[in-house]
Length: 326
Ligand code: AHN
Ligand code: ZN
Image (tube, rainbow, N blue to C red; front, side):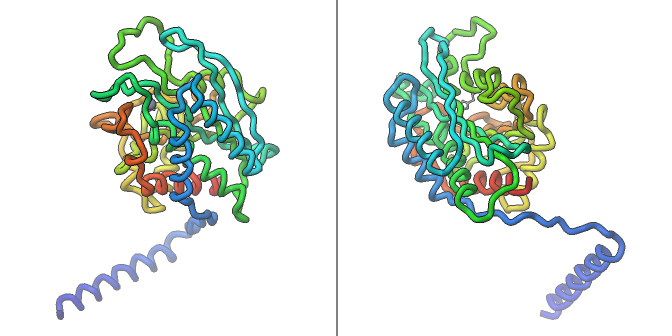
């Protein structure tokens, strides 16, 4: 008992001495953050459920067309300025797919802009599964989660009395997830079959001369136990943004999710935004330096049972916080 009192006393002395030292010897201003609304993981979850209920969002299917119409209507209902970019692309096996990138703008008149992106299509096969390999996946996480988080951010910034100062463009890319199957030997050309929507947009922007201060891509952000590492191309093209976002996450108490550790580079939509559009863009993606993508990736385990609101909250609140500080 005596010992403990002593420890408390020494502890207080220590805190007191640190405190006085700080105020007397450094004149550093305390960092004052702008106030940020609450991100609702329940709402983001419902947006994911809605997408999954449309069925797989595989291009040239009814589920894809229905989801496209719903996304446009939803973004318009928030009062955003919505544009779609319809185009045709050829797949690795020679299909002609009708694809649509959906662009929704908040404060279109603002010159300082941030780009938030996710892909909304889903994979037509479950090539990493052991069963029903030729059937399309639900894509609750791969396709659904990024869109769910962005829709919730769009809902908040357009309805809360507290609004961010920057302009924001949401881009939902189509045709991200149709790279060659694991089991195929189509490695013929130097063409990349993934990310058809971002490849198209980055060479044909929705507005000539469009630019953004930086971009954040969210992909595979809703799985239970998700961990986000500092992905290679994000570090290569936008190191400061990666560090800023990871530090914000840590300040918000999400350092279990946003791990201060590097991961290798992966091909994803941000690569084309960086390379072709010249906009520094990071990727918040579940990709481990130890084992790569999660066990569910491109399997039928990527369904609603995989989705955990805690992961959605960590990512959604961190991205929301980031845009409110600009
Ligand atoms: C690779 O498989 C290397 N890139 C595709 C990234 C991806 C697929 N994200 C979601 N699905
Ligand atoms: Zn995928």
